[in-house]
Image (tube, rainbow, N blue to C red; front, side):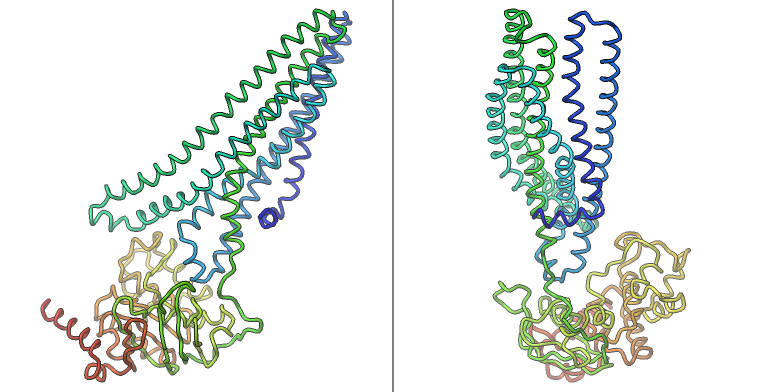
Length: 580
């Protein structure tokens, strides 16, 4: 895990090394200062001249300035190293997620990935910041102060030998209790993020069904669950302070009592005032270092679980990858399903698709009809290799899709999915997702084919109109037409519309299909639809039922011979008649 995360340091190795180096110098200065002060006190006690005091004062000012400089440099390099480290982790996580297949995405929920990119990375960043500064400073200060305490205080410093283990054992016990709580809480963070994400995405539905109170209650329960776990952890961690205070006051009482006693009884021969003051300072430094070490352990404990979750994403390998010698050219838009069986997970008991044997010629227009859950979308997702078949193979242009370079294949298979997504930016910027080099004339041509040009010109800014995140400022039908235009700009050999005209009226739907037939005759077109009117002029129509092909034929043939198609057609026409 550490090895995996250390790869993310990269260009921030220098500040990550310089920070502990300067921290070490800072600690040395801080530990020498009490020793110099002790010497000064003894000189004053002996009745030294002012020039001696001035010399000691100058040395102390210089050392304080050096300590401050080293501390500032350490802090600056620490911030640069930690923030850069976190930036690289986020970058690597995001880039890794982009390589995932749909199978990988299904394994991690969206909310979980968001938590890993935000909360988990922040925890690791804070831990790293402590590791390259505090975790170096505290042990170094502890060892140095111990040594100086024995030098200055002699036998009296033995108190630290007893107090330090007591404090260490107590802190270890606290961390041992807290660790399981932190492990539990991150999974609950995923649920909380999921609740927020669903609510924001479905805000219109929530308000339409007046479910605000229900959503508030769901969020409240998730937040209180996290709060409860954190409260338990914080209550245990709160014991840090009283234990620390107890040890600190124990040491102070011991040092003050026996130190004063030794000075008085030995008349300064065994322990003088300067040594006594230095011993008190080193006492505070030792106890403060132990306290800070406990905080570092707590942060590292939290970050440990976060690190596991981050590394889990970084180590996840895509289930779909390029072959060793990929094919870089798609000959034509022909599609062949040869005895294909498919299920989404190895653990799934039932196949999503079974015994699919289908052959589509290049340039054909194919309609696909079927009820909800008939696996229409599953069928077309295999063509662009969003998933791999469980058994059998899918061929495009006569070549198994697993033999193609993924980018080459997907550039020749344009898919307009059920969930149409537009990104924040202008209409032009959204359209150029299909082809970043497309000219304005090509954008207009694609939009005319998708029947989008007319409504775009109605916007005051035309093609420069800003689209809000998720396309919330355009209607469902407008969004669908823009997504179709975007897909056309790829100039694919295969165009797949997965129920992508459901939000447009039948007239516009007919115009889109007519434009496809006239202007892109060589492109293979697959249209998944709920309405029979959307596929009735297709060369062939596939009727899907429970993950199998129930029938294939023209509109007229299916109307005569297929019960499922007859039922869908009749129910829709009756509905249309009753509306009239």
